[in-house]
Image (cartoon, rainbow, N blue to C red; front, side):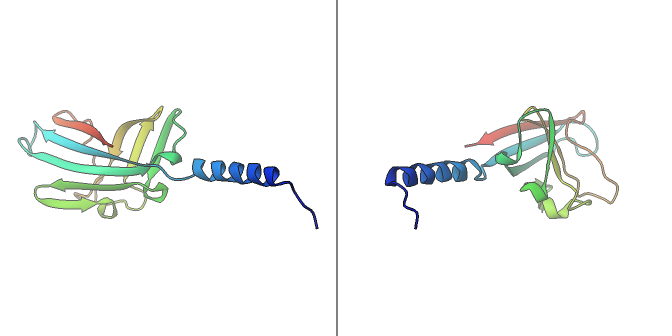
Length: 132
């Protein structure tokens, strides 16, 4: 039977504890508001939020998170709340796109079978607010 000094066991336990803490998920939630100023929906305001696991990102270059990576999305439009499972291309979409760790675009579409894009569309002003 091998015996290790207590200090060796304590150091090994501390290393394991540190490694475990580094790999835990870190949920990040943003609320967003979309003010429509052009087109058939002008004058409407839509709200929503998305949550993702920050530990799934490297923070470098272009990265995409999907539902399988821990992304969840909900959005209220015209009195109806839709979630990530209602995206027309679920489970491949929605997708949250990042550039160097910053949110650049949410690809989320539940309107019709033909995918469209509203994020960054002229007349669709998106405001993000990080929830702490």
